[in-house]
Length: 446
Image 1 (tube, one colour):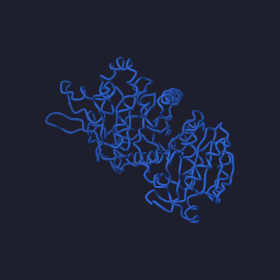
Image 2 (cartoon, rainbow, N blue to C red):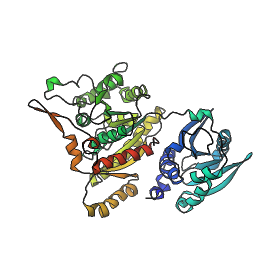
Image 3 (cartoon, helix red, strand yellow):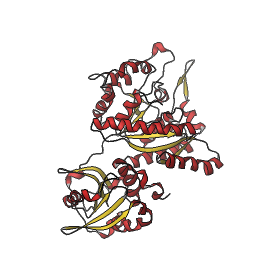
């Protein structure tokens, strides 16, 4: 499907959404750039660029054709930013610059000692006039028609930081746990170092990842070392001491487990203001250990959901697209707004919404062909959330993999597996592989 189908300038309500919904999800792919061809939040001397795109791949450290891209709030006049924007282009010696607020797109070109406006169009014109932009700054154009330009060495050293994704919906039963565990497996198989954090007191993710091997509570080996200990202690229980290895998939993943006792601990933690940000600080300590952290969250607006969304960089929202789940999206949006206000007080950027993932979807053909597209359209048109292109259908293979067990003497010991390991050639395995790839594109890791 063409990228422009997913862009509507009215959906960009702030600068963060201009960056994610317009530049990352729509414009860069439409111009032929994948995440190996662009950087975000690039520091050059004292300057900080929103984006720097190059026609060549990241591992080619010279001969780059560059574009500086700056995003502004939809209500801001771009003229106010023009002087500094010209400085950005001159400093990195980029050939082109794009100045964007979602409602207006300007393309500038550096010509000797001057920087000239080449194209100015409104956001609603983007679909019809995309070929003009491609002709100016499309990757194909820059690869074949511009002379080589060297990239500053400081930019080549830019490191891709650990990305933290909260999987959240305040409606239960929408497939959060299934999404977390099988997405973790798919990411691991793509070579990513994955940490899963279970912040739901029901501990379904902990169980599904095979960490509950005991049959009797007297043998419980989780109660004394789980996510509560990470949150309640300032100087004790770093992530490295609490994390456990899960053989749920191959390669294995790391897990910070939850426990049913987490429910009663909430009253204690509510009284500790610092508890809201301890996970943030402890994740900073393992930034070089993991590529991606997935946080499973409770289906509520409680303290643990807050902790997860404060710690995350991104939010992924699984939904079965049924009425109650849809109505719950209003709560999700309000909750994100509230969390973003708190994040701002900490100096953290707003949460980036990856979108709504259609999950637990029925498989019969007429539903998929006729009804499902209408249900997805409701999410985008009525609630303002982007739909991911991947769909996770409700299939027996997924539940059978989680219910897998092994016999040990007279006992059946839970031995859950990811669907990618249990049925690697199944449609469900392919769906989670597709989801991993789409998520990696959205978080600029692919």
